[in-house]
Image 1 (cartoon, rainbow, N blue to C red):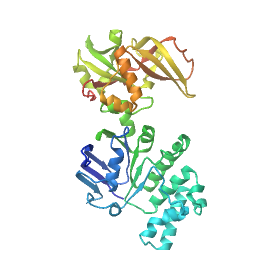
Image 2: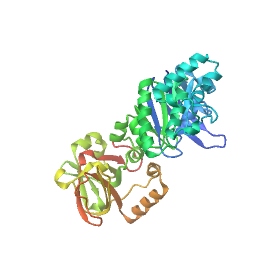
Image 3: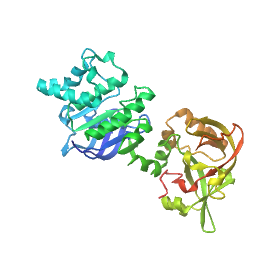
Image 4: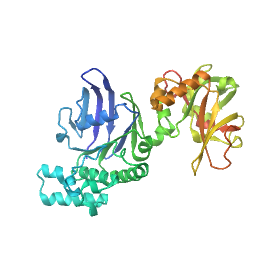
Length: 399
């Protein structure tokens, strides 16, 4: 096993564009780190540079104690699992898994032992004599992973390995991969655009945007303490509700004014402990964020912490919960960071239209009892102790 260190890594393509900027990241021996971000953020490029499939333009790449910038993929002793299974169609499962060892002239009995061992781990023993066309998508991906395991590499690199699977199988396979990595203890870097995969699988998650590392932390810390608006808007499903507000001070207390002055929410000590700089922004505009689960009935929140007479635009019943989409007069944030966080041009254009009209739709998550009717008016309590506060211009958390 080996530690992977990316020290100020750069990637500039010959025709000019820079794909990776100053990327510094350490993946400890045996750690499972996820690279996540919107399309085109550079996560696959970063992984391919670790593998040696992309040339490094600047900085140093270490695998173990060795600088590997100029080493070929073969010399780096890593194993990669791709989005496409890349199995040889004319070979059996056993031959696919053992092919790299055969090329390395490993003894036949040793190849058979390793293939059997990997098949035991992955539950593939009964399929060893089948060809790939006789396997399901999940079984093919297990074979691809088995091919990586038999090599006993220093590190596993996985580039969106589950994106070709259907939703139900993805859920099953991500649990299997996480359990497998924990069992083997192999240093692993895993690229995905699916934040649910990122949040449920890794020891730590590295969030990239436009070739820059925006934050790296445990999944829960990313969710609870985002460093900037991009991470706040990108991590979470449904995403965090984010709007422009103004900081006010009255009688020694801090408030956020929203909805063109119609709504005023007190920022309690618990939120100010997390975002102490908010108290210094009196009269200034800030970005305020509220997770969908941090709403509740008016009688369950502090007095006065209520969005009154909100129009219900949509109710989604999801069995264990319901999502209530309601109208506010608060102004959306329409910076490039938020465009990247949304990762959906049509949705972002709708946000811009809402900003011009002076309002936007928020989402609240509730227990699935007593659903409100669409177009009805409701009061929604805000659990203000969970507020998130950011600089409206540079997007940094007000810590």
